[in-house]
Image (cartoon, rainbow, N blue to C red; front, side, top):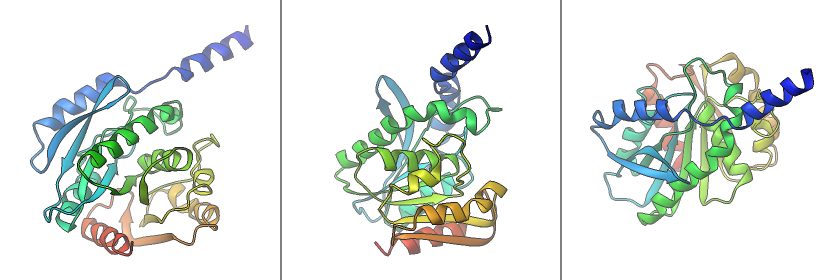
Length: 249
């Protein structure tokens, strides 16, 4: 009986998918509130998901895919919206996308079964930017969005040329999604950016992330002093760091 229950639990976890109802609720809140940018609906397989495209003010052909953290949406006031709006004034066409979400109380580890849904969303974002004539594409991702993005970049074909991971941790129990394992397979320029007052798991795993990237001469860690996980009161420093680092490539 115990083996049967374990198998049943495994099957339930295996078919877990993004909370579509929650995605719909987020979309209903976000769509009418978008003042900077244009709402775009993308498709991952048969699933349609929300994204926000904000054109660069200087009509450049640089594109930035913005990936939010656990359980939120592509116009979140902390980290996500400041990046998608402010970076458009600095020569980037930004596309902030809705990632798979679960209920509000879901733990970080409960998201692991959703990772197979990640590649189709990021690929759809790439395809959209390419359809706009944009070939110079980077990913800027926060928290679990950074873990999802590193998973994608390490295991799938893509046309992304640089990756900025903000508040990324490497304590995941599943080796298939563990950031330290993903970073070992990533060879592009990577900025591992976090705050001096970030989450304990972000701070404690900084050495693991750096060690995993020892093969990559274009990997860099940067700490923003006084910043917490959501960069409260530190948006100018966050945007300045992104602009300066991306300007090197």
